[in-house]
Image (cartoon, one colour):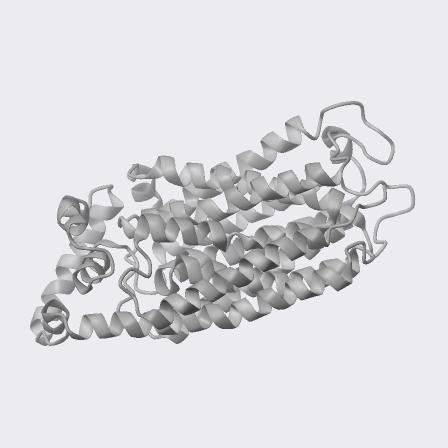
Length: 414
C-alpha cells in the first residue's frame, strides 16, 4: 500500500485535488447549458466516478507488501470492519446527495456562487468536526481564522448572487424579447409548451433544436439581455423569473451534505469512536474510498433513474432507453466523473497524512470554478460595479482562507 510520508507530498495531492474538484462542476454546467438533461449527465458521471475509486484501490492500495496495521486492499476486504465501512458508505451517501443538488443549483444560482457557498459551509461545519476528530493535530490559532474567512465568504457569496440577480432583472426589463415572452396570451403559452415538449423529446434522443441555433446564441454578447434569453431557451433547466429562495435553498442543502462527508470518511479510516473490535486494523484510505464510492454510485444511479421518470423543477420526463441513446456530450460527462473521482481520492490521501481539517482546503475550489465560469460561461459580464466589488471581496476571502488552512496542517502519527 502506498503511503504519503511527508507534508509536502500531502499538500501536492491537495493542490491536484483542488484543480480536479474545481473543474468537473464546470464540465457538467457546460452540458446543462447546451441542453443535455442533468439526469443523463449524472448517470454517465457516476460510472467513471466509481471507476476512478476502483483504479485507485487496485493500484495505490496494492503497492508494496501488506502490513498488520496497514493491510493492502484485497487483504482488508475479508476483515471484520463493518462499523468503519458503514461510516465510509454514509459519507458517500451525503456526498452523492450534495452533488445531485448542486447540478440544479448551478443553473439557479450560477457556478461561482454555488461553489463558494457550499464550500464555505463545508469548511465551517466539516473542518470544525475534523479538527476535533483528528485530536487537534492542526494548529488552532491558524486553522480557525481560515474558517472565519470562509464564513465571511458565505455572506459575500449570497450578496453576489442577490446583486447579480438584480442586475439580470434590470437587463431583462429593458428587453423587448423578454417583455413579449411575459405578455403572451394563454393560447400562445400553451402552444409554446407543446413545442417545448417536442423539443424535450428530441433532446432526450440526442437531438436538440437549441443546438441548431448554436451560431445565433454565440452572436449575442455575454452578459446582455439577449444572451440571457437565448441561453434560457437553450438550456435544459429553465431559471429566468424563478425565486432566488429556491436556488439558495438548494445550495444550503448541498453545503450541509458536503460538510458531513469528510468527517464520516475520517471516522471510517481512524476509528476515533472505537467501534472496531480489538485487533482489527483501521480501514486504509483506499479501502474506505472504495466503499465510499460504491454508496455514492448506488445513490446517484438510483435517484437519477427515478428522476428520468419523475423529473423535478419542471424538467421533461425521459426514460432509460432515451438515456442510452443520448450520446451528445457523453464523453464530457465521463471525464467529469474521472476528475471528481480522482479529486476526492487525492483529497483523502492527503488528509490521511496531513489531517482532514487541512485537506478541507480543497474546498477553495471556487477559485478554479470561478475562473471557468468567467472564461467559459461569461458569468458577471456587464454586471454592476457593486457586483464586481462583492465578487472580488468574495474571492479575496478564499485566497486568504486556502493559504491559512494549508498552513495549519500537521502530521498524523501512525
